[in-house]
Length: 167
Image (cartoon, rainbow, N blue to C red; front, side, top):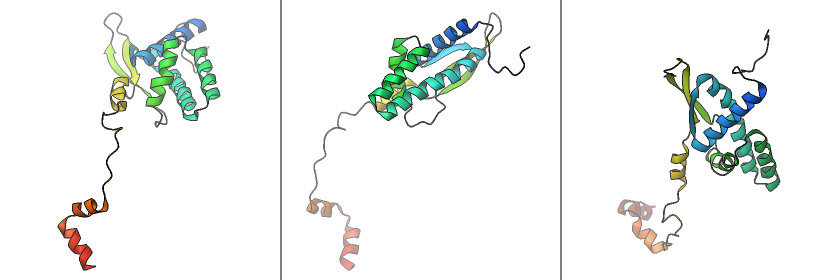
């Protein structure tokens, strides 16, 4: 009997379950979203959240040793080097200000063949929109010319000038 056992087995052995979760997590990190069954999405969500949290904490610290240890720890759970690289360089920077809740599960209905409940697990903020936000405009780096005191005084509306003179 399974009294007080809280994990979901997904009808797989421990090794098969680890491989499934690791593979799904890598796909979510690389592509931003994955369509799967609802049960698998519910199992992989906390795993992905923990991986993103580790990457965010490592990037917040700024210490090379902390980053190295975080990558080492991520390699233990994620087998894909491209997923680890994207997690450390893009995803963690996207969620630096967010305290948690990096993913969401959206139910997508039933599968045609076996009527299994399906869902899409995705990041709360899409990676494509984040790239667009982080792009620096062309004129953002240019310094504005300083205005002199005379020019500032000329820009003050007439009404404000009158108020200054009466005081």
